[in-house]
Length: 427
Image: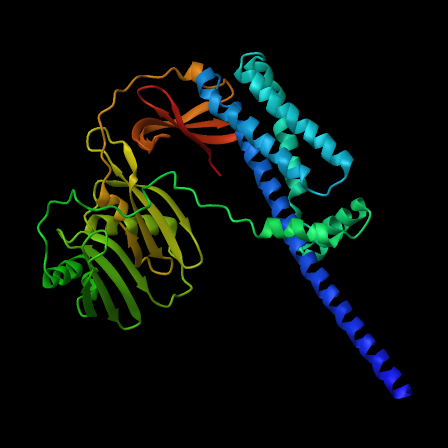
């Protein structure tokens, strides 16, 4: 009898331990899910605050009413979005109420300026201090700087705070919330621009070249690989355009290149090899890139940007319109140059080969004194083609405007209707 009782008690104990272990494991998984949820919400709030500060800066850039419409709309929209983010976080009621009220007043103020109920001069005067407050708030929300953004910190500060506020460990309720958050499936939206998609290269009228001609064309462009082992294949029948794919191997160097079947225009190039620790300087990099651009026949381009990583320089070039010297950013070329000796490592000329259709457009002078606030000085001006909201290539005045407190902005203004196509703050 005692043995039977002992077996029953032992079985109950084992079942209890198993249940306890199962509950603990479930709670731990839920704790991790909640940590991810609050981590994402905190990151989102911090990023939105940075964007809001940038939008506020743009409202201080212009005095023209039409030019101010978009940045004022952005202030209202983003401030409302941040309020929704903050309201979903388990922070103290006092802190939430103060900042919800602040953001609400900021958004409503932008609407009043847009509707003409508050003078823009008064808004810009007040925003000189508000932008500093927004930057400070963004720093406070940048939780990743505290305790390395560790899960323990997030759980301790937010998950436990949520439990304390609810008064009980309502794991089921929190679990449903976390599940709804983590399993949300947002449908993908269509891209706002199709320029990244491959297009049919129907505008190329050149005759098709053979495999041997493709090899000869490759060697002409890259004579250093004339003795390399070269293997050429044709694109598949379902490819958006016909091209030759060239694989080459010489010593420690391996790589590939793509040439259009029509005319043998180079679309891309990639080279891989070990790297040395030596580094060429900026001027040597520019000289090397100019040499490659000339050799490859892209003589109607201009370098518009360059950056670096540990092994290479990355450069961007844009085509220049032959009629007005305007930069056509959509017709771009990207180069990758080795930092150790300046060797060409990569090339992407797809956008350049596709070549955007550019329509004629009238040049109507703008009154910069009426458009920009007096705190900004114009440092540079030239012409460039950029997309508008309808994805049309429009000729624009590309203007660099600087303010000692806010920084430097690059603004694109339609030369015909003076629409602000784009404004970005430079690093």
